Amino acid sequence: MNENERVPIETLSWEQLQQYVYEVDGSWRDTYVLNATWADWQTWAGFVNANCRAKELAFTDGDTVRLDRIDFAAMEHLWDSHGQANGLWASFLVGEISIRCHFFRDDEVENDFDPRKITSPAVHLQLMDYLTKLSQALGKEVVLTWENDTPAACSPRWGGVWQPLLAVSGEQIQVHPYWRKNTSY
Image (cartoon, rainbow, N blue to C red; front, side, top):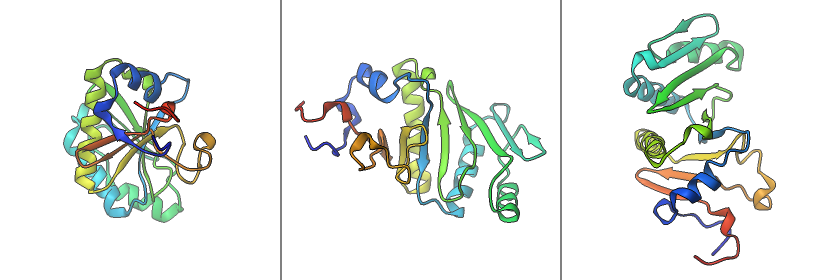
């Protein structure tokens, strides 16, 4: 197997996903839509607003906390007027998983979650459903990584070659089985 090759998620057991993708190592896992545009952010906000019940959604635009929706106009205004997204954050539930968005960069939609919350195959499927539907809504790949692991950070785990733990493109979900390095399966 090529060490940078991704495999279909169906080739992995729940135990492998737990041990290698959702490893409880003290850090969170991030999901990213890389090379994001304002249209992607607007689609993401609309997607979350449409798919999360208002009582499970919190959004703050600096001073105001809204408990019912993500306000794209507020996001746009704060990014435009300050050059960064200080004070913006959102949290929402995907099934049993609490997802947070900190709006760090306008060119990547980043969400994070605590891997300790992925407690069963059913909860894992809730996350995969969210990522699949988001990928379809955006028409872009959504990746799952270790905390803060992006191409810009280029983790030394891969010898300088960035590779996400998991990638979702439409309905296709693939995993990078880094633990199988130089072995066949």
